Length: 114
Image (cartoon, rainbow, N blue to C red; front, side):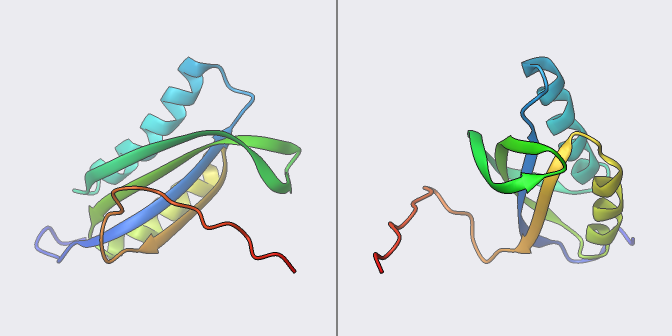
């Protein structure tokens, strides 16, 4: 990755195992954040969404701690980060999307009744 490559804004959702202690969960999140920073990325905003039930069981996990992270990094770094995420045993699920802006508030719409 060249250092003069244009950085894009991304939104990352990370679900960390609920089986971890508070300290271990903090280390797992720090590992994700360090992966961004080590690629000349910058953390713009992080929102801890807390412990939530998963929509379906993932590798024996029924719950996880959700973190939403907005960050800027060069596009070429994303594939490298994903490769690391697959090796991160405490990371239950992750998703990275290109973002247009940072949301100030998270609002969830009610589901329409059928």
